[in-house]
Image (cartoon, rainbow, N blue to C red; front, side):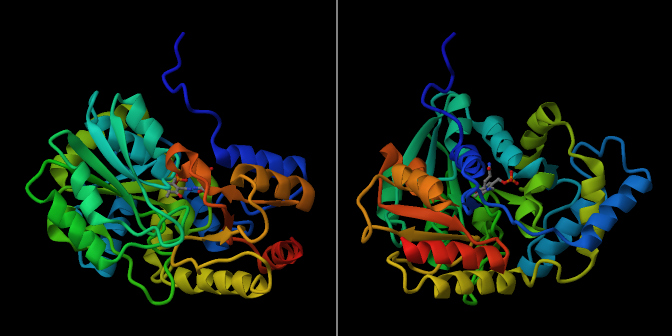
Amino acid sequence: HQSKLPNVGTTIFTVMSALANEYKALNLSQGFPNYPSSQRLNDLVTNAMNNGYNQYAPMAGNLDLRFAISNKYQLLYNSTYHPEKEITVTAGATQGIYTIVSAFIRPKDEVIIFKPAYDCYQPAIELNGGKTIAIQLSAPDYKVDWNEVASHISSKTKMIIINTPHNPSGTIWTKNDMLQLQKLTRGTNIIVLSDEVYEHIIFDNEQHQSVCLFEDLKQRSFITASFGKTFHNTGWKVGYCCAPEHLMVEFRKVHQFNVFSVNHPMQKGIADYMQDSGTYLDLNTFFQQKRDLFLSLISESRFKFKPSKGTYFQVLDYSDITDEHDVDFAKRLTKDYQLASIPLSVFNEKDKDDNVLRFCFAKTDETLIKASEILCRI
Ligand code: PMP
Ligand code: GLN
């Protein structure tokens, strides 16, 4: 048989985590916390299991959770998403993204993405017969040239996928970026898929620029989000998406047949947890302290960096150390120094190599201290 994804191998996250295990390395590669999620949240999930939430959740998600999500948008962004019609709970952001793409992309439709890009976008586009139009951004600022974006938009453009705060670079989009996007898509049928999984992890008093803050943009956009990032439990795989009703109707036609519904006790536990105010509002401070600790400890190393502005990732430039290809260097660090990271070239167009690696700082201070000691020895 002929592969539908001839150029796709095993995702780098699986590859690097396996290598980290094999060499007993500190794993700062795949993005996940190495400390527990909240005991209260765990207890609320247990309560849900003990109180009968063990059968199928409603197709679009537990209603308490959809109300809690709706309240969050009202509170943080003064933006209304109707809990019954405009919010759907997904099995992580990954399923939300795949479902959005498959609900709208037909063969030959063009989808614009910005590289480096999170690795699930392009396979989703291609499995649905779409054509990826990649706009390569450059280290260290990864700034968008909006004239370049304009030059790629045509009647074939069906969707634009954006991601701020950005994995893997740790950069964020400004209000001006969003206004430019709004201007370019106004009057078109283009759908915007806004991957906002790191919305609550943004530093130095910057504001997250959600598509829902821009009324025109909001009308054509899906937001995808992930509780794994917000509540430190990536293994639970619960997320959601929001969109205006006319888009959500199409999303649910697909969602009902590729997952139907998402595990119920987790949803109910998260819904109850979200009743506690401020459960995500202090995430910025929590992760900013981790970023600052990590960066202060490696300030004397030979790695160069610009502090991450959002996400729990820090990109380090190793061009003063070696000109090895980033995949080779990441593997060598794992094997010889017991420290695993993610090479950025795998997210770039034509595997462009800028000699940078991504390190996840969602780790205990003890792990960050050990990792920095290694980085200072290299
Ligand atoms: N988008 C981005 C940018 C991510 O970093 C991740 C998780 N690494 C996802 C989507 C997927 O989220 P989930 O684990 O909830 O499927
Ligand atoms: N989103 C995580 C990261 O960027 C990994 C998720 C996964 O392993 N698929 O590291």
